Length: 297
Ligand SMILES: Nc1nc2c(ncn2[C@@H]2O[C@H](COP(=O)(O)OP(=O)(O)OP(=O)(O)O)[C@@H](O)[C@H]2O)c(=O)[nH]1
Ligand SMILES: [Mg+2]
Image (cartoon, rainbow, N blue to C red):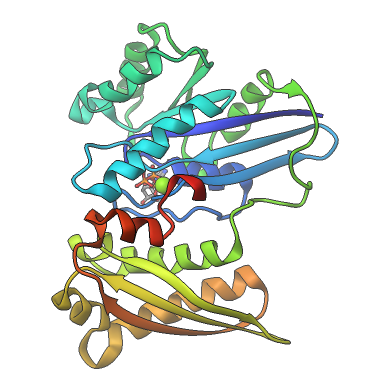
């Protein structure tokens, strides 16, 4: 059995979580059009029975933090670099904003000996000439073992990437059972699905200030009963989340429930409560209580 740990890093919104889901052929990590969707490291396990097992570590987008939650996110993303056998550095269209946006990460990567592969994602949105230009720019840096263009949404070149990664695996014991796709607990996945729907249904700052806590999780015969508390940062945000006559939160709950049902394989009764916890993203105690802490990786 050949095994290895693979870290996926890059700026927010470049498609790290989408790429991991595409590799696994299953949605484990939430992915939205809003930057800073991922807040924790999420492990995705790819296994070819008796051949290989790769443990992917999806990380939060590395950015200049504006609050303590942001610092935590960037910190755990960077600390994952030291724990893996291969690093996938994802970029999308860096020429749009100039390579500058990725420079901070590049400087960190230069100091690490671990083999690095550059992934230029969202090639579907790039003219071939732009792709060439981006490719050349990174090739000239001489720091990547390979450069691969992907379209995570259509799994384009994901097979090429998997084959490339196999070159870096080493003989060793299998870490996880072959049918396991993640070792993040079900409660965590459920809270993430609810947070994803908040990100999809709400705009601007509101969903970024949301944390979801699963208060109770009960598995009955053919029913899973889940009670979730949605924390937001302001009274005015609470009103937006609930919406006129509770319409917004109902829509969010329904959409989350349908996805959770598919995940757990039973009917789901989902109850949601919205509460305000002012400024929690700048409180070390609060972010740690919400599971954003080093020992919860
Ligand atoms: N067109 C196109 N869109 C993509 C591709 N990959 C991802 N996306 C979209 O890009 C957005 C961001 O994707 P995510 O996977 O959440 O990005 P991320 O890097 O994990 O973002 P953070 O967790 O915020 O750091 C989503 O709207 C995806 O649907 C791609 O190859 N092509
Ligand atoms: Mg992500």
